[in-house]
Length: 142
Length: 142
Image (cartoon, rainbow over all chains, first blue to last red; front, top):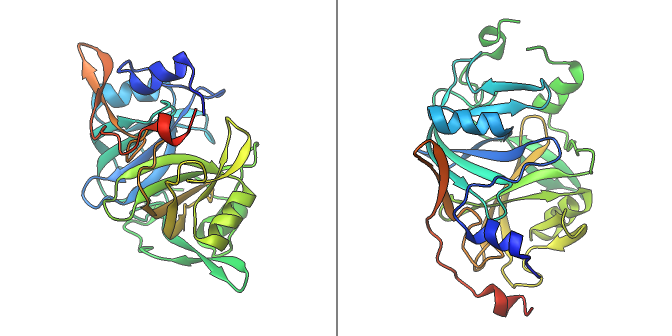
């Protein structure tokens, strides 16, 4: 495994130089600062990153809605950032957050409310930690 | 926020139907089953997913090397999967793993060995939990 000078600087340096993908995004993992659980995986563009750092609230970029988005702006389920970390090649960010309410748009605490299980050679999901903390039909007022 | 029938099935059903992106990948977050720390963010294609589930060892797909890859096959730093979870829209996977040695190719326990900090209006990184558990030059035998 060879590492170019450029990679070396990005991996071992202290300059903030996020490596955005072709869509201008980095991946962001949000974990619950209290429990350590992974709450969600989402994306940030440069503006979402800037606003998150400046405000201390998590901002994301929605690929499906093609829009900048403050987490909780519709649902009230905001995320207060406790710590932000950058990964080795600077294309992924980990934020530890205080989650107000539930992180998932389905009303669950985490988006990861199903286990993957091996069943008779096939794969199957099963619910775990899948209680809803809010009713999405009420919160998003369809 | 409206949800189509198809989305509803994917979010509320128990069928394993990963939503691969245009490159045939889903995002995978690996956390340390012992500490809860995020170790790395990587990608899996259908084959990596299949092998991970079948073997209980983490397999990924490297975008930079364009190759299927069993974590630790060069470095010996393997990951034993304790639990696998799927997210709401089935485009991200969370695995809790027993990490043998260090997850990061730089020799650190986690790829997230730098904090992002606000300094005088700019952003800066600072090392945290950045001790190396192995020497990458020795392990990868350049």
